[in-house]
Image (cartoon, rainbow, N blue to C red):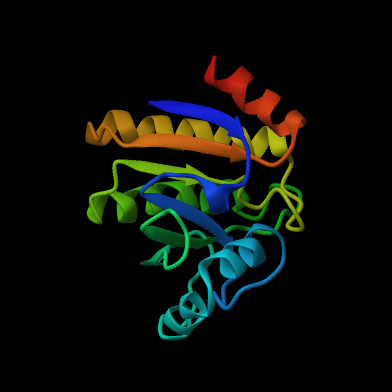
Length: 165
């Protein structure tokens, strides 16, 4: 099952939330900073031991002070016009995050709009990749994990709801 909501990802009662991280995994702005602030300093301590993460890949930590048990950190691609492998890397973010969450036994996962903030990925294209990749993963694996697309703005929510039908 997939759905889109507008809300604060740090407050969602799901098993795993996805952090649109940078490659250092040591916190940043936007959703990354919000997740680090809400989880507390233990999250940064655990992230320091992970030695970063490549764009399109994912690593998992505990959720600490978050309602979510797990945080899946995935660095999305910076938008460079769409001709530098951005779509493949962004799809990798969703696929690898779902794979890690499933390995941890998560029954629900929430995604922010990966790469759509300061990284400049157009929301319509990013949302299409997000929904398509998650749908394919669920169909291919038969995994019943609930996928929540947690949107920052009403405009983004509209885009996801159109894609989800």
